[in-house]
Length: 355
Ligand code: TRP
Image (cartoon, rainbow, N blue to C red; front, side):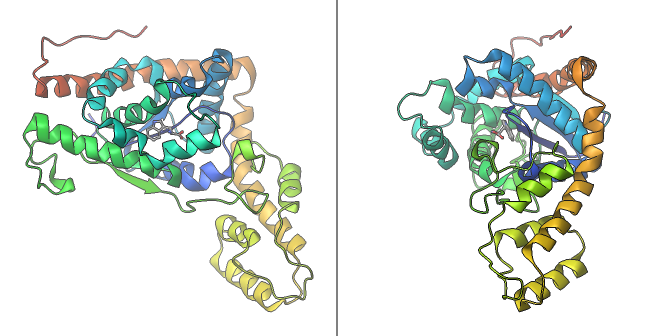
């Protein structure tokens, strides 16, 4: 048994991961693996909320996201991968939590609203689409984590999760509603009130220099990109600066990259000083320097990913997922049984066999 505090976080398998994911969340996950007992969830059930007609694509993205994680340095010996569709306790807990969240509260979630707009769903979304936000509370709580490292956009999902955890603890575990968040477990609550943790760069700007980096906006540098592609994409980054002897704005899009990817404070300070003074330093030069740093970050990732290419790589990923599903189910079943006991639904323990 491990007594490290737990982490749960995850991604919906939508396609390739990019630098925005890295600085927003992945980097944190890799760094926290030693200090925490980490669970990383592949939200393949959630993928069906908008792509129920594309099961092949979802299966492919599921394998690809695990490859990206492994390439990033998530270590399957230390961390546990959670394949959402094979953890039935998540779906069961979702039902119970749905009873503790007012319908209007679910629909008021700003991230949900933005998605409805961005995806142009209007009134034409499935019942399951808003339901995913309740499911996300269950994804988290079933592992009873203390910390949820996520990108900024996901914080709006952590809040209802904290609300529902408090409510469950109060209703079914007899915890006093005036209890401080950190005290819930000590007062007999089943669920710790989890905290969201946003990465070093909350919102990385895309290579269009305008919007948040995102695959669908076509402004992303992928973790699989080679130096040539990185250079080309950064080359197109618009800064608005005309000449190299013109004072530059060190808060422009390019300098967001400088600070995010040149991890040498003295060099960053020097570049900022020269740029602000218009001291003969061109955007092209800085872009090339940033590209080298990004390339150095991605090179070992590309290498690890290449080792997982093709069918042999798929087989390896499936093997890891099968093994981890057993471990994840053991933890999830344990929480669900405790939750059922608290809810007077303890009609007997059960055993789940995953072959
Ligand atoms: N909604 C998250 C995303 O799209 C994925 C996700 C599902 C998640 N369940 C989670 C993230 C639980 C953190 C915790 O990226």
